[in-house]
Length: 155
Image (cartoon, rainbow, N blue to C red; front, side, top):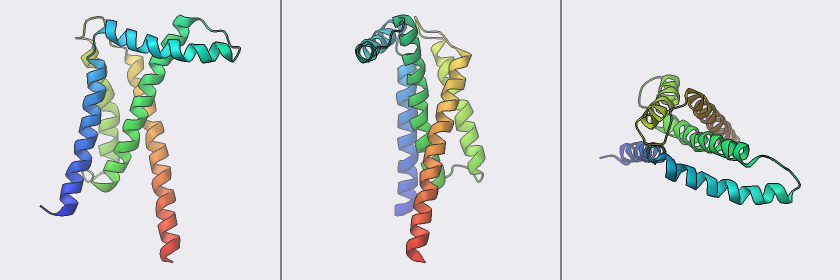
């Protein structure tokens, strides 16, 4: 197998592994998922109150959970752009991106319907998609900057 083909496969294995990690988070029963995010919210709440802000803990916890959706999908968007840039699965890079951007969040939320103590929220799919777009934007800008740097060095 050629080195380039091996690297292309390795890139998509990494993407697949990250998607599996996202799905494993969604397959965590509600009690454990809530306990984990409550720990994070408690930790962060100390700093919020020290800074002089007051916010209802349940509301804060809710925002932490939504931020977790956004951030895990932002990282997915980042690595997907890099993977599609190097080794697109289909000829259309845009179609590659859109299918993943829509498909993975919908599958993820669908999985949660079957997990005890979890609920599937359609809004979370949109938060996930917004995260993918944000991560993709950062990756795309970085790719453009890096390409521009290499163009200037070779000129």
